[in-house]
View 1 (spheres, rainbow, N blue to C red):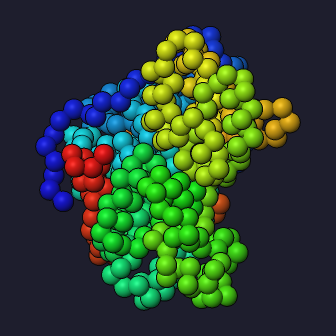
View 2: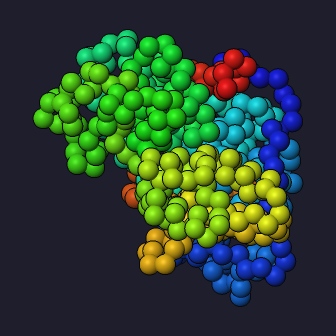
Length: 447
């Protein structure tokens, strides 16, 4: 891939405001959850008298400020909207960027002057950045244990055997669309089949592109985003097939294993991997109707079940949800169905602009109110402080370095790393699928 022209960091709305005297709501992690190299930073953080901005920033300044001075303009700090607590505000405070997965993936590609990229989010996001990075750019993650439960339900050792069976059955007719919430190995699978990566903001564009070619689509991993996207494009439900729950063991493409048998697969335009996001599957039409009756506009993320999306007033990516709140007229009342930390940030920022935001699941009798992404919340101030200080000192643990093709067991911290030739091949195909997504999204002929 040719090196892009150097130009300023892509613009990201800097909507967060770190207000004085507001406690930071990041939940403290147990000390034994930290890597050995990070424990001194965690011990110091846990001993702080409070979690107010002045205290936390005083702690972070001792490590972040020297690191920024050491690396200068070559350092880039990134976080995702879903980050727990107030880490998104802290990343912005120190000049970093907060964005959705699509914009994060473009950061290295569009900012070649940034040589040290430190990401406070989950592993697949850091790996997507690494796939598009130049050879002289390093990508680091503050906590390798920060994963995605949906991605864990679609590891390559589970998906590849099924894809092989489908490719044997359908040949070039089959095309893989890999959601951004997948490893680089699955993004490479999409590239090898002539497919594409997608995000929740552009899934409809990517799927339409595939269907317009007369292709049969294997959509991995989120069945709900795939089903919602197919519905949005007018695909008849009888032409959408869903593979079995991957948690039940190895999947065979045969009449005994597939609902409706292989005949359902043969007639399908879209075949869905059976994974899902535990955060978004809790949302129900009853929740939507409750808040609509209270006069609220209900917006949900498209990883929610189809019935919930159809009942809501609108659905879209984190970028869509954030902008809908920030750009609404004063006095607008929202109920938002997505990750709990995101909604809390939207509630706080919306209040400053005259909006009233509640979490969709916060209805009487609900036991799932405010559900957040627990794995993303594993990134916290001690991980940020430790990562930057260890990098400055040249002592950063190699396990925190992210290369294309790396896989991490989020429980054991056991890593599989490809050799150079395997990694080069993966990058070639994964870049192909990511670049295909970029071409589709940026094409003026597609809307």
